Length: 398
Ligand code: ARG
Image (cartoon, rainbow, N blue to C red; front, side, top):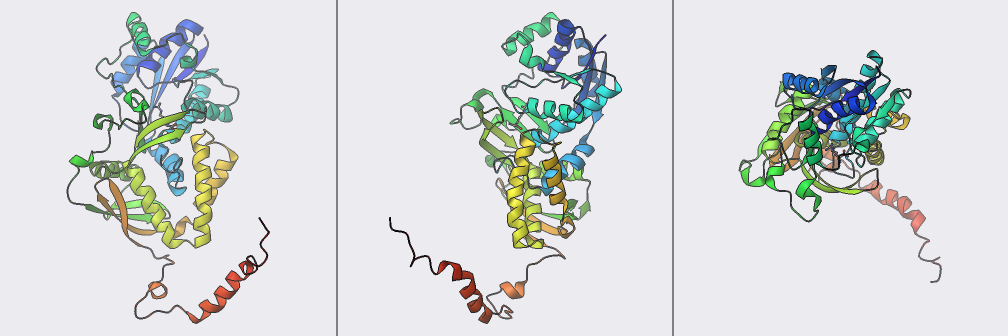
């Protein structure tokens, strides 16, 4: 019997997909679930996969790997798509693609399948990832092929086939969550004029429920990696989970944006990423103090490009990998401490220090002890402005 490995979340789509792949193609279906965010109930997931007809289910706890190999490079890169979205979902997909390929090879399956729709970015990330890693695997996307047009039709199919579904979990939104953040789409959010209702948010409190007083955090970085929170050592996963909790309480890390998908559609996206917001800002602040002007300005251009590559599903591409090397360079200098203030939805850097700081108070000061040599400013400015002096005299006529 031909075999397919399906990326399985246990939701309605992928549960129906198990049955559908068997009926339509006569496949043996092996399921694979990656845990990179919420720890779902493993035994429930097993039950579901079995009830839907899967021959086997791999559940893998991949949070550590996700943090080390996907989040950390994105943190170093200061990656935010279109200046805002810290790319949580976009970073999770190549990890899933990588493990789909690994399991398919192990299981000697010729096919892999996923539950992404035909109009999103996720299909791109999974399929391009799989094809880059193993072009001989064939990919099936049931949601692009099957006959169900609405959720109701899927529910009916599930009921007819005794596939268990959570009727109670009928969230009006499409949600994807991992430790780097959550994406909330669809339902009423599709109207871009409509403010997201408070109940759409999962990781952050509304400003009417945040603590009145601000809270200060001290984050210590070593070689570009956040290692301590308020003096206590933390693994990267721990750091991210703690910051999600703390900063989420202060309403930090909400984004509401109109975004340009790869497939050409503009979509309205609501994101929450409390830890990402705090860590991206903190890293940027420390690097800003430890690195020179040219590096910082040039890096900004590359960060933008990097975020696009990740968003567009090109995680395993040579350019993205080369950029990783660029962003890794000089990280030894990004060591030190950052003081962040959480206050009514904001995470503000209010202090930074590093042994590698290039900031020199004696040069910057307007008070006593100034060491800056003003007398050389005059000559410097003469030469700096020289190329522009002739412009006015030799202006072309309109
Ligand atoms: N628009 C975001 C992205 O492309 C989020 C996608 C969310 N995916 C989902 N299955 N709900 O990365």
